[in-house]
Image 1 (cartoon, helix red, strand yellow):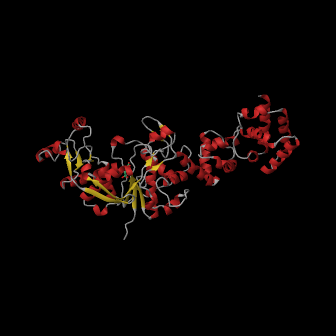
Image 2: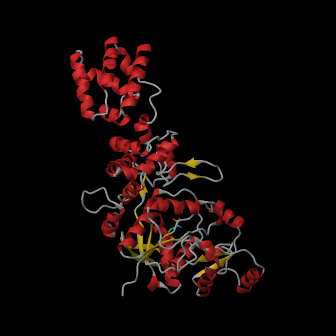
Image 3: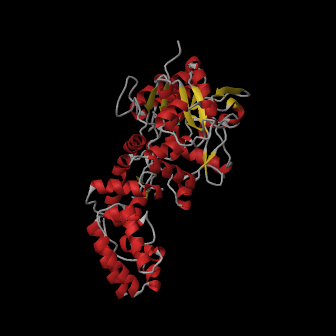
Length: 503
Ligand code: GLU
């Protein structure tokens, strides 16, 4: 019988969640759902120095926003918990002990000062085959001394003993056969002086304990794969090893290297899913959510970073992605991040979404700009009218705030040079014709009156727009008038005529 698919997203709670992390979570989720499997959130918090308060809750909230909810997690629990590595601390030492007993790992007593001195001597110093016999460890010290050091509680770490001249090979479901020469890999620490495992030991122990069938992670972890594969083998678990899936990197827009938060700051686009406030510095880094992305669009654009379904289709719902996703269409090559394209996805989603779906997002954006929404039905209509013009949710207040707050300023430069008493008179005579009719009716009356007074309608449409909106933008001006309603339209025209005459 096929094993039930179990996959995990295993972030370290160290700060903002990079879009690459969310894409890893997404691909895990898609694969799990497609195979009726289980998607697990495991928090890899064994590095106490990098622990950041609030980061776990933040990650959970990012996943929630994206709609990619785990089935098992620290919050939800599950049969294979705990799901925080710090709470599994006591489970790892036995594996380090087993590896030492079997000759696959050793105690290393070198102090941080001794290691620093070595690194000063040789800047490329690596603790490994070439150097391990010159260091203070259980391979070089007599057994009695090792025992004495242990009895005295001398701090130590446990290191893997990388074998000489071996090729470690495995099949990656995206890359195919991958091989590493063990001579090029150093003796990584498995257990730290504080008794916590490093990522290398913890990931193997927990993937085994949680019966993970497929391990999805970013390509940056590929160089660590030989260590993990050897650990699976040395611990006698090779038959239960998950299949490996190293996802392509997300690259800077110019393709030169991995996209970092700093690139986002430098080029002016978000890299984190949601805004992150550094608890130490209080610096806030804005996220896709706060900059006005819809979760549907964010998920869609992430899926397309390194995957396509083989057709020209670019817009996918999460359900469609679950149905269509396939590992054999994930590319090996890194995917360049293009912010303009990201906004395009968001624009497409805004355009396609029913106004009811957009309403809560837009409401929040209006609240953020302190624009009072007097009438929720009106807002729904406004959304329908302007959504084609918005790339970001945050464009709605700018594109449609005037529906709720009459213009405080007018783009006088656009009207004044051609403003005449005749035009003022035209608008005075248009006022009584404004009724509660349709946009077409209002327009017909406007044009008929313009013809009667000897104007080309074009000369009057721009002033009318500026009267209602304040500037040279927005949807059809008569559509705007209809939504504003007769009273407000009349009031705005009157007010603006006075202002144009005066200035
Ligand atoms: N804790 C690792 C990270 O922060 C996870 C790598 C993995 O999924 O194995 O990215």
